[in-house]
Length: 417
Ligand SMILES: [Zn+2]
Image (cartoon, rainbow, N blue to C red):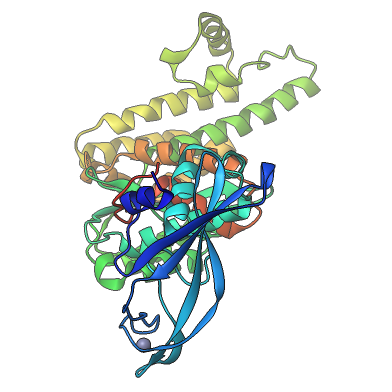
């Protein structure tokens, strides 16, 4: 069987035919090059207007990398023609296997991009004897195609969140779609400022933003401002996951301060190794942790009182009616304000000033699940942490869209992977 028979089976072109195949090099540097020629009497297609036109001249032969066979690199060799286009002037022709100045064929980019979903970019490059850069360009191409072809008209609910990335205090703003039928990453932006989130709404479009039903977010002020301005009609929900996070942070702080105070007084360090007893839900404690917790509860420490306040707050989420949830919230805040524990009072003040948004959680009940956001954030951290060799925001952005964006793919007659 000839090589071109196989190629015609998996990748056939209307206006081009495969010519001779030849070996180049030997040993480890062995490569396979296949000539591609225009079909007789076919006219080149102008890359400006996508219409056929008369030929102008022919450029030097270019190599386009195709999917390797048995780990031998495969190239198409083709001399691009220039078109004497009536509309666009003299342009280079467009060919069905490649785009623009890419030296990789679309099929090969799709192949690498698909593997890059399963392996890290470095591993992908090593597996197919190519470079990290080529894998990056392939994923970038797949992501650009996906973003240009994705459907955004079915978005009712979104979640906005901030995530730390790289070392130091660098943030990304992420926007997820949180609908029951479709959960995906919609957008990533650098920083967590007003400007950052405004860029999302610009991409998303005015009309779509004004039709959003639910927006879920943290209490980060810049986000609250932008959401109120751009999607004021949507029910804005402050989600459970973030509030639990604020409470846990407050307890951590109280505990650290109190441990220091006790140490200074030379008192028995009862709080040592207690962190997990206080942060875990009671039903998840091990037996030892349960004993420890019982000991702790016997002392009237600030840490313990904070812990009890946090545990008590869990009841808030069990209410069915916003009215009674509100009643509970007010009482909880009042009690916390009287506790004289500053980090907890801070949380209470914050919850008080966002009372309406908190109660929206009950109004949106069942339509927004904050567990989804938490799950996404974990996967996001995994992606940025995995050794992709991200040095730039662009690389991280591309990787996140690729793994979490549920982007559509072009249709292929033959699946190479
Ligand atoms: Zn043209």
